[in-house]
Image 1 (tube, rainbow over the protein chains, first blue to last red):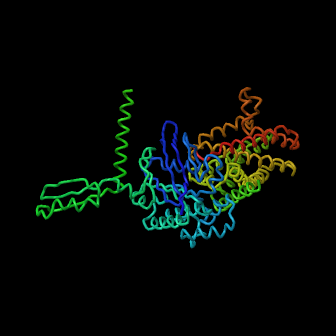
Image 2: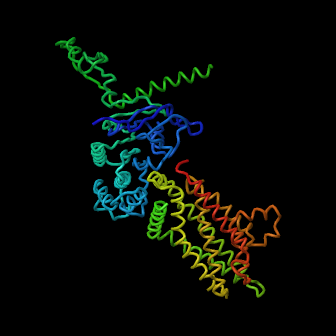
Amino acid sequence: MKQTTAVHIQKLDKNFGEVKALKSVSLKIETGQIFGLLGANGAGKTTLIRLLIGSTKPSSGHLTISGFDPTKGKRAIRKLIGYMPQSPALYEDLTPRENIHFFCQAHRIENISQRVDDVIAFVGLSERAHDPVYKFSGGMKQRVSLACALVHQPKMLLLDEPTSGIDPKLREAFWEHFRELTSKGVTIIVSTHQMNEAMYCDRLAILHQGVLLANDTPRQLLWNNRSRIKIWRGEQVTEKDLINYPEQLPGELQSYGLDSSVSRIEIEEDTLETVVLRMINEQEAGYLKEAKDDQYD
Amino acid sequence: MTNMIKRVGVVTGRVLNQLRRDHRFVGISLVFPLVIIYFIKVVFDALASPSFNISVYVVPYAAFIIHFITFILTAIVLVRERTAGTLARMFVSGYNPIEIVSGYLLAYTVLATVQSLLILIELNWIFELGYDLGQLASIYLVMWVLAIVSMAIGMLVSNFARNEGQVFPFIPLVLLSVILSGIILPIERLPEWVQALSFLTPLYYVNEVIQKLIIGDGLFDDWPKLIGLLAYGLIIVSTATLSLRESD
């Protein structure tokens, strides 16, 4: 399948008064990908999603979704996108069916009832479709919320921490849903601060304090980073970086041969968490330097 | 245009559906005004004097009760939409401010119709007003319009509040309308600069029209005040629609 650009962001800035929520962010998202926005609270993930759905305007820079500017012609964009906010954002007195029906009626959709039934079945709530939402657990509400975002069969899904506060089994089911959707050509942009989830994404943008630190595949992010070998000889420990792990490993081990004094060998690989933390530390160190320089200007 | 009307209908239907299940909200909206009016009756009975024309006061007081309760409940409901994230979701789903405000107004108008009717029945019953049917119908119409205008004020206020707590600072402004409207004492007795402010409260127009209806004038005899009330409502609804924003 030919890759096309679903989202194009160029030098995007967003300020809320004195607070710079996004600083010159540029990235492209290809159609049919699961694109993860990874970062701690306050990193700028939700702001970026709100810019994409046209809820707020950029302070400067440019962004397009399938060639449309979200700040102009919102109705066209909103037919293309499905949005699932962090909180379930549902009418608790109403049933899942009534909630989903209401949110999709703004779009001109044929055969709405059938579509609503299908999407309820997709999130596994057919048996509870006529119960009021206030009787539901947090995870069930999240499922209804996802169904509301999916019902008009959007080409792009924007999910703001969709799995926060739900159990691991349901989280697994959500990611299965997401993968199923991308196989049908849907582009998914998902924000998360959970590293294990980020590994499910095809591509990841790492954000910290509004700055885009990296934009790569999770595998590449890990490969670009360090692995270490630790060798114990009695109480003495030698630690060495492996530049090209695992290819370099046999050569590295060869140098120790059958040395009987080696009591233990350990290989430490960077996890995504350590990679991200290192990036954040390096970026913050850079910022401190800039701040110091500014003071002496 | 047809699609917009359809979407207004969808929002109205959804709000009515919620009202149907929110017994507490409907109960407060309908019962509280009736209880308050009953207590006003108790107070007026204690103050009873043959020369005292109760209806001059009691009908405008009932109008104020409608104004206050409708305003506060509408404002809180709309703020709740904002804090729950459903308002943002409505926007993202493709509804626009005109559809949202119109949908809410239409749905709550159903409630206001019942509320105004019950209040008028109670007033007529416990205070033995003795008005003819035409007078009662005219008073009902004015109260009904006031209820709708009060909802629009509630919507407008909710646009400037981020949570329910931020609605409460607006309550003194509504209470101030008791003084500014002339329902306690004629506004002619107030300083000129205070009189100028009376135009800012819908209760002023309502009181002026009601006082004329009480003495037996027709609904349109003081038509400038009636037009004033409608124009006031139109301005508030337009401002509430224009200021309804998707995000802060």
